[in-house]
Length: 273
Image 1 (cartoon, helix red, strand yellow):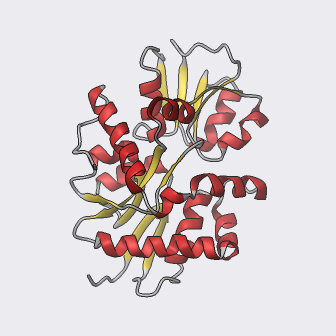
Image 2 (tube, helix red, strand yellow; image 1 turned 120 degrees about the horizontal axis):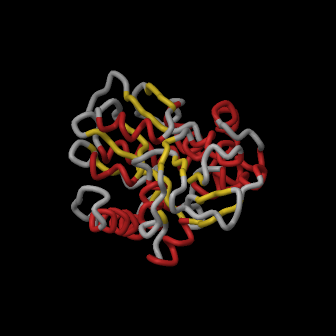
């Protein structure tokens, strides 16, 4: 398939800039020119529904609205263990019933997990807030609780917040599977999924082989600049599932989407396995 240019949208988070550095900088032989867009996942979830990108990072929770037009790629995404979203509050006795809760997007995996976990609780109000504003908002009392992702799990104590729940721990204890956070999709008819998979897999391998090569790119786009936090973020979210989803990764996606459909939270989708 010939390209004039390939449009790609990922987040500016360190795991994505680490993974996609080689691809977007033309270091993978045979790749087309790349038009890169950085956007938070709540933005890419809806942009993908409009067909705005050829390759796009989205939440697994958004897949039921996207799989008619996109193929799930088995590489480049974010799954893992010990990396789940956290529910934060100012005090450990915060009751979520009647509370105002800030979330990073209404079609994020984090929010879907929250809805499954909090099925017997009734927050009064859910507000979608850019994730970097959630912890300051909870600390200031604007929100009673907040659902956080990414490097916030390493920094929330700085805001004098406590974790009411680790939704990754809850998910893993309940399913025995990794938590499926971010997926890479290829738009049907715009890019060959097998070819795109090879490009991204090579980019992941190149990042691991020479981790210093992407350092300036990561620092230029990271919202958390401290080297130790960046290192922890990449080590947590770039793992064996980033290179290859495998059976456990696909089983995790199935478990999330089948459970959410059974609960009436998302449309049903055909299982991957």
